[in-house]
Image (cartoon, rainbow, N blue to C red; front, side, top):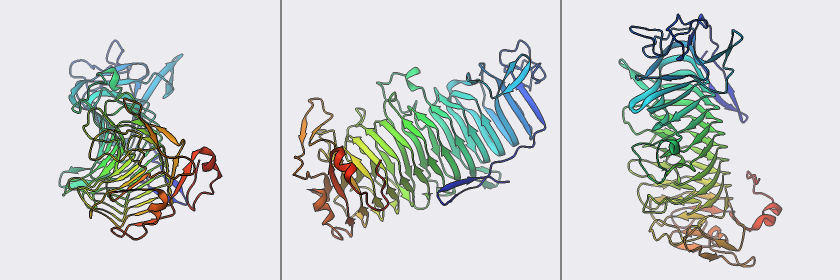
Length: 489
């Protein structure tokens, strides 16, 4: 049965594939000889001359399971290519001669020779495949998922020493294009371990890119409850701009923890593509913490809700301010319309928490509502034309490219009337006292208070602005009765 993802009454309903298995096959890279693939005589990873019972050149059979012994490392020189139907790849160990499946904490490792190997492991043209309890790394892309359906990748470690952790895409199979669809990637640690391989004080984009990248032809894939760490472009990137390929759409990215404390440059997540190419994707309930570049929302009809974005700094490797929380830009050939950004918590950003860029393409009909913004615009004196004035919470560019957006029911809070900015000279920003509302909105060339901002209803490019709230400190925040649809934690 095809694995389907639907949302009904706020719940995910997932039908998982049931595997009808015919055989198990065991690999132990530390085995002294290449066995027959039983648990008593496992195949070695090297296999020996002409061997087919090894990861290199393995021919995966339908309705079968393949296990590598816990605590071992398979050093590969060519891609492991998983194909077929009803295939499982996992881990095993022995306990007094008894086989224990997926019972180890020391996951078996698959390691390539580095970026000279394009892909360490590929799942292609498969249906009902499970990959679990495997540690994959040291290739340009650790795991590539292509033209696959009803797949599960879970409880694994992916990406050590790789440029990309997981790449997901559709593919042309013969004369027919096949989507990658109805998959689940859950409970994994997707970690570049960049600091173990390269100095973090050097930005080397050729060596480090995305933790998880959704490309064209990906639909209804669920990325959930993963820890995504230390990548060099995005933690999660959804991007499609190929004219002759289907869109990336209806994917759900939720409940992930994304961080980049040991990376020279990284944003939490981004979406982008021309009209209809990146659409109806949902980012929700993710935690993005300690990143050094803005989250970018482009494409159309995407949803970003209930995420926590905590501490976004400018980056010493960029000559402009990029420490925004969420940035809407529509750069190059991308669109940016009809996206919903709601009920997020955005705090401790070097630049504006939410930024509608005046240049590039049109930003229109986006809804920005119910967000809680705490202590934004902390990096004064950057000296860049893109930078918001110090203390800015919301930046609306003065341009005909920013039109007809709704900004409502957002709560903007300062935890102190004296904000310490993140600058080399520890400059203090005096934002006023508890009787004086500071100007925390940059609206079409003017610095406004929230009260003044709300008064701009229906003016300046048909913007719709109403019911935004400014608060001082924690006590006033707790005393507030939240606007309809807004939850304050």
